[in-house]
Length: 150
Length: 326
Image 1: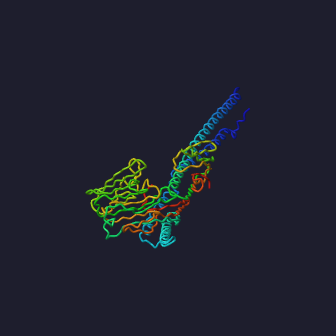
Image 2: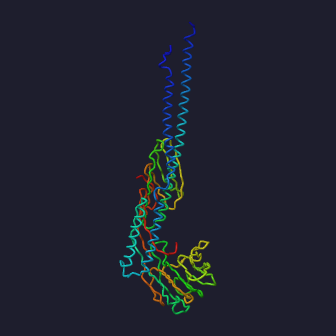
Image 3: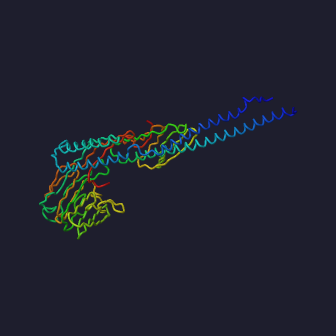
């Protein structure tokens, strides 16, 4: 029998445990960071695409409003996803003093995307959630383009 | 002493495996979102706004043609509603039904309905035995229409539309004027039409308070007839800047500068042989020479509705065929 048997086994076991724990923690942390980073990228990309689709709807509604005369009503509806990559988001239409833009803001992670556009019709400041979004115009109301949920 | 039993070895690796599994599932959700984003980005224009506008243009053109036909047919015209109104209402119903049938095959619902009309007067010379615009064969200046008013309530409206000349010969200058009041020196808008050889020339003068804006245009026309569309601004189909907007942005369309209550005069009408026609709004007629006058529709307003699953569009269309562009 060897007299140092018991000592080396305990030490080697403890060391193995410690080093494995360290490595595994490092792996999990790196993996988590990677997932967060990818999630941010995808959320940003999806909000940009949704924003551009909405801006194209606003441009169409603007054309219809300019072509109209007398009493004009426009309701242009499109379905967007209600959540992006697991997080909800809000859409804001901002006249911005003649330089209108659409702002999309996700909740968690908080990412903000702004898309500017050009319109001849006046814009009303309005906010809506994702889902079914409608661009609305009524010449007998305030005569401005706005967004709302339906 | 540590328990080195084989069954509980590798617990840390098990925990690590669970954690990695959760990370992979989250990544799968993110990849799913990314794929959906790509699909969303490839969505085209689905609402039908393009179709709504192209159908609107078609309705405007169709109603315009029907106004021309109703005016030419010269239905008996007592105060509306009468045969003239009934005729245009029937034709609008037909346009609506045919448009509906056409659009429903591509998923759109449309409706066109008559809303209102503005009456005017069609002044014309279509007598083939009368050789010139002026049967007295003199060059005197005479009034064609008095106190023509712009259509109220519409910013782009004019008081005269569809002024067309179809001449077989032009032997000297012919002048058409839109003035606010006599005498001659108070011209507000004047067009001088002349021909030398193959070239038809139009010189337009617009008197804006103190200054005069003059513009000329020339078009080569090989042979008669010489078709001048004064309100549209063309000579035998060729555009004429002197009857439209100049390069400097000055508007010289018919009657520009003339405020409400202008008179239309012809001068030198013996120099031109052929026919002409115009529709004026709210003029007090002056029976002059052998010009014919009929009650006519000046403009018609219709209500237009276009609906698809993603779009509801309702608006009014004012149709006044041949009115100078704003």
